[in-house]
Image (tube, rainbow, N blue to C red; front, side, top):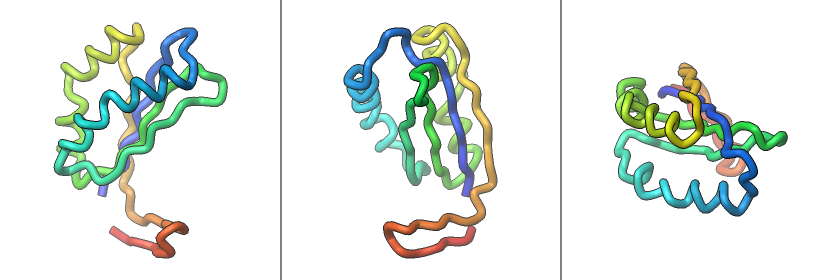
Length: 103
């Protein structure tokens, strides 16, 4: 399993309502990704950064979803390309479900 951390600047002056509405608008896109297991939407405490943490079945799926077109769309909206880091998500502790999964 692959973890992917994506970070880009938040729109200046955006409030929580605007951030949540924007996030809701992309739900259909991410639900349609067959290799996406989970996505966490995050906004930094200082209000400067939006981030997503994704769990994917493969790195190829992550890279395909965040292709050059998607990256350019982020640059057009925020003025900066997103920063993307990949991880080997080898174990997940889920306290809510009460289990540990190893990959």
